Amino acid sequence: MSNCLNAVLLVALAVLAQQAAFAQGTQRPFWVCVGADGARKAQDRACDVQDQTISAPRGAVSTPPSVQPAAAIKVDGNFAAAQAPSSVDGRPNPFKPIMDVAVKGFGVTAVILLAIGAIKVLVIKATTRKQGGRSNRRSSGQPNRRASNPSSRNGEAASPVRDPYESEPDAPSRPAPSGPARSEQPADAAQAPLTWNIALIRELEWKRFEELCMQFWNCKGYPARLSGPGADGGVDVLIADRRDPGKIFAVAQCKSWSSKPVGVESVRALWGAKDHFKANLALFYGLSGFTPDARAFAEGKHLKLISGEELLQQIMALTAPEQAELLATITRGDYTTPTCPACDIKMHRRTGKDGKPDFWGCNNFRRCGSKPIPLRG
Picture 1 (cartoon, rainbow, N blue to C red):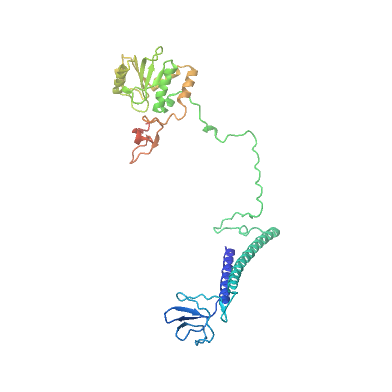
Picture 2 (picture 1 turned 30 degrees about the horizontal axis):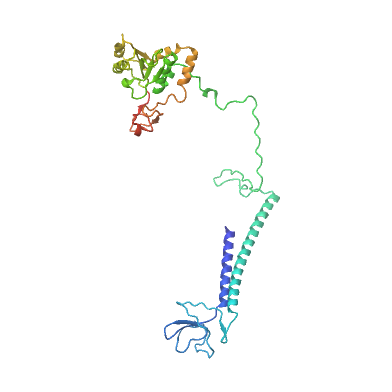
């Protein structure tokens, strides 16, 4: 920064010196006069008797000389720029244009040369100082000035600062570990293999639980499909006849999210939906069980109430390959986060406000109109 300031100062001094030299070489003393018509004029002789003298050179005689005046220069305001005389003893000066161009050209050239010379001198000095300091440090073997201070301002040991001009030392090689390579993940962090159990069934989100009931009947040879949103009577799974896929053999309702037993009202609604689809059988899957009134209503009818434990027993009755295939299908991807019933995308956990519990909400609830789902038990 100091080198740049020195260069700027040298250039400014050169410009000022050139302007002073140009002013001294080209300007001459002159008188400023006001004529009878009120017009101002500047001339290199004393003002005429009939004119009024406004300003005159110091020590000049105000009496006009007897020589013929040179061409006066009219000025605007209080400033007049004098030029080289255009006539000498009444005769035209043929060298005036050449003199003006030479003086101006010499001044500009001098300023440029001075500026270039000053910049070159500063660059040479800076380069010499840098190279000299580098050679002195290398020859004397002295450490860096910052590294020579063993303590910092806080009283703690300061880390040595490497010389930026020295090559970086090679990093010490780390010895290779002996013995067999070990995994970065601890052994207890490895996920245990999934198996069929009641805890796994309870972890399934509501839609994956419906898929479990549907896939179970597919394994038994019955074409089954999900009814989709908006089905009449709250039917979730439609099970077709094994010999006639166009005929509905059974309808199923799946309820996994509630922690309370299924009541008789929901069971009656499913019984009415069976007649609507002209099915022979109605199945109600409820993980939390059923109330005594619901079981009493289903007694003696083609209506089966299946709890979570009973569903697990039916799955375990399948063959081992069927169980493995069913497990891989149900536990693919994220099988615990609930799906939005309206737009069929995964919901997100939201924090309840004003002391209310957390819940599951859909990012598109303003468009799909889905209601939040409370967290499970």
